[in-house]
Length: 73
Image (cartoon, rainbow, N blue to C red; front, side):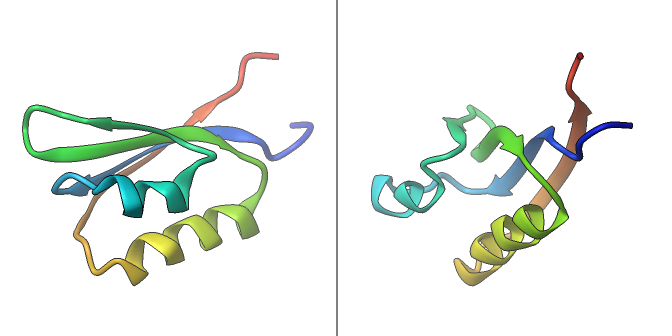
């Protein structure tokens, strides 16, 4: 296993406002029809993932899902 970079899919309850979404400009943000928001993008290492999850927790939203997708090399 080379680097730690992987693509993460994170789902939270509710739709993020455009102002809040700016905090995650490194992620692709999709408002889903079930009332959740999907954030998806590359995360370089565990520290970056912890920082991302911390920013989500700081918003006070409910975290529904975190999935790691390995990058094809």
